[in-house]
Image (cartoon, rainbow, N blue to C red; front, top):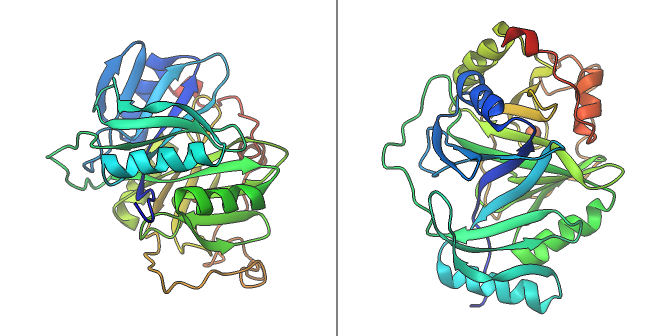
Length: 303
Ligand SMILES: [Fe+2]
């Protein structure tokens, strides 16, 4: 296979202290229906066809456990595995049938920062996909912190077939589909989760979701605003484990003609924190949480 590459972001798996309580939050507040429970882990879906977009595992320390990427078919999975092994990266076993809800065929590997990923194909899809007016339709992007952003981005492009969409002083945005970015690498002291974004089908849906969160004890920690790179609308929250989650909408759709911007191209608009110059700056709690320091929940009283 000449040019095997991943073609999308499937799901993110979190480690959380209390799977049941966190699953309740993601169902009732964030808008993700429970689709399966297995081995003490909870699987939640969006309104789109992907079998699940969030998995919750019991762990002592909250954070990202694994990020799942999509390949178009089994042959691509095999080719990507061969490439990763050939480059000396850490593949964790050969490709095989996945014994988990939704099934599929894939393999796990660690990127050079040690973050765990899985590439899979032929995962079951839902036939009842339909946009909802206040719920996410898919996972939009995962942003990972690193103290070696340049090398991480280069590895994702060279090995996994991502393309660089934009660079700012703090972040590199890379794509594997028409979405402007599915992964971003953010400058930090070392590997950790910065945030995970969930796509809302419209600005209106984003506002319904943000209103549901705000009115039930989860304040908006940053936003509403419109980002520069990706041109997406955003609202950021801190979930019950102190991790940062984002509702986003209107992510820019790009093709191979897209010209990657540089930090010079993406200077912050004077007097503002977003394109509209409407958004307040991120809260101090959010800045800490995005830097990889999960912030204690303040919404427990609302549950
Ligand atoms: Fe984001």
